[in-house]
Length: 316
Ligand code: RIB
Image 1 (tube, helix red, strand yellow):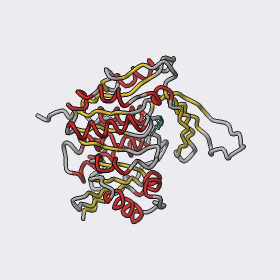
Image 2: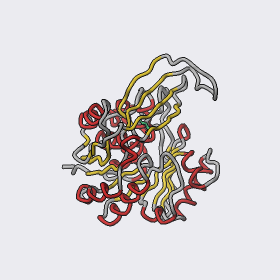
Image 3: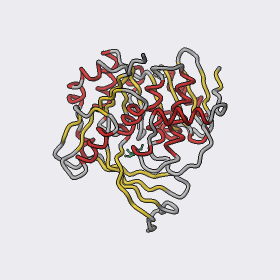
Image 4: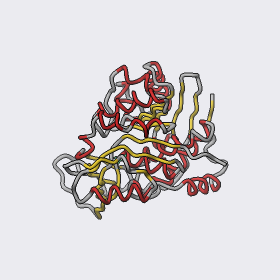
């Protein structure tokens, strides 16, 4: 029988306030939204939901506030099978993300950290037992850097693979890279970390080589419609194209890829895990919202059966 992977996620949870617009407003411009709705989101929480949906037992280490959003956010995570015993309650607002989605499904996001901004390195250290029983710990950049770095150090010390998603992007200090087992980032984040434009697969490869040289053991650069590129320190290189699909809303596509890949990589070879994660994020962009757009493992498997023969990985 398949053993259930255990994953710890140290990160953010937000209430996403999503407005649908025909086109993004320019500076100084006012536009009408055709609809506005509220959804559970946050990069950490979305990745936790994706990992749980892929079949892992997930422990979420994060914080909500003491406002009206706290309960629905916690209940939403629990309803998707995410363990919330280590979800702290802070005397402030819950994290919020103000998202606009345009007619092509692209988005812009403004974050208000709220409780996410109060997570401390000490709270992460207190979750040592949870991180120690996980095979991987997933992090992003929506909580204070000291707390994220504490998750890196703790993960390395207790033998959990450290999966780092530097989103929103800022350049981490040099000593952080050797603690990253897998660094997963999109083209914008890759450009910020390497200070070079990343638009093509060739640019992504150059960026990934730069990040490997800094000490990360494996790097995955996701490039939206161009697919993704995996490179590791042992010399593997895998290009994974995307599946053609009608894009409705790209929100949480990266989070879906990361959570699903993390779990799939515990069960299958890297190329197969990349294909599984790519299929999951294709399903995610075909639906609206963040957590509610994340497919289940069964849905991803059904999609892969339907699309058998498409998107073969190019290994070298
Ligand atoms: O990656 C998508 C997420 O980014 C949204 O759910 C929003 O909360 C922001 O954190």
